[in-house]
Length: 591
Image 1: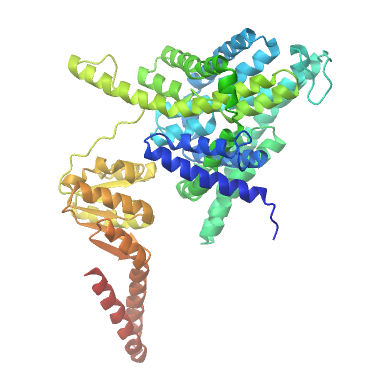
Image 2 (image 1 turned 120 degrees about the vertical axis):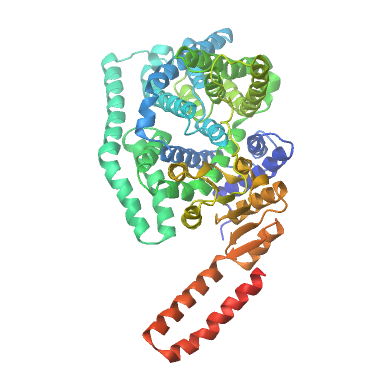
């Protein structure tokens, strides 16, 4: 058995410490992201004790970025993306320009070259994919207008950075550096070669998009549908991961497109399939685990000494990221006529930097433009801005509450009220209704059975499409996670609640909330085993249907009826006691 296992050691220590510090951060009522970053610092090279493999951690984090962008693509459509082009394209370009100028000005004050200032400013201008999407997902903003603008903005930034990474080695000699992996001092720039490089890069991106639109649109959904028809959940999950990672890898190696952008387009193509929601669910566990490793990898890069050695430079860097970029984005969004709430949300989402900044900093150093001091400031700015970002959203929540009070006192508002950090969650006015948690195969059958009897229903499901279909039938509901949205169903006034989702952990939390809101409401849950049923009962479920027993009883009843109809009496006599015994056991359990 080999004892030198850096990959296993990195994953185990990274996830374990992330859990410990994340739980502690959650206990202190701050974002778990802070705990993940501290876990990275703890296993990084600048603190005593165990040191994880940084290169491996970065590659693992890249998988998280791929899966996260793939998931975002699954909830998008080309029509929605095209609809925000008028603000996303000019907005991202202007914001990059403003942040680059601010970064270059700070670099000039610190005595760096113009080339170093350009690289530094560009590194401060691009937001972290993981942080931005996490913030939007936590606030259910991905499918809203502001979420679409933010993601479109992010994609434009991604494309600009891809072009920058290709062009920087070619123009480095002109900026005072040297070609990548070449000796310093060579200042010759071939303009024709530079123009050719630009044309090839744009052509590769265009070719990738064309291939995905023409070939990918047919092949990717077909592969997933074919796999679904095999009936193997394991193969389906493997197909989803293969598509996400495979397209990202091909995009990066054949077309020069970033992993994140390639994965996003794979998800975007797959979003047109009816299996998109199932694909999103299957990739969710790995997506969350590897996203955590991304934050751990960021923490590993941070050297706390820089806070002591250059506190003013660090403070100025953080101000450019958090204030400079935010104000630029705010002004741009407002200039395009969007409400202040949308502008504030987008500016807060972009007020941090991440993975592309690290890549650009490393390239800037390799071509002799960015000093080591610049890399350290970028890393410090990334870590601190990621820590500050959740606080910005918390501040926006307070601004929202304050503005609501002012608007209520004045009895007038200057623009339609739109929440800043979260979409409004209207509480239903239904009373004596039945709450159904989950509209999957089980929950949908429950709804279909109750609806014809004019039973008032309120449904909570993660699929926005399912809720839209139910709304079209006159059934109230909301899309999202039931653990955070149960209050919208008005459980205090409900007659009953049916929890039809298969996740036992989430079901326990939902049942606990429902019981706290309405101590007398009958709650029925769903479990796979007697142990899971006891778990749900301990949280307040009155009844729990054990699906394996129910399925066995249904099979035995069907078998009994079939044998009886065929007139084979001997077989009927053999099966009847077993069926009755199973039914009796089930009755005893329910009572």
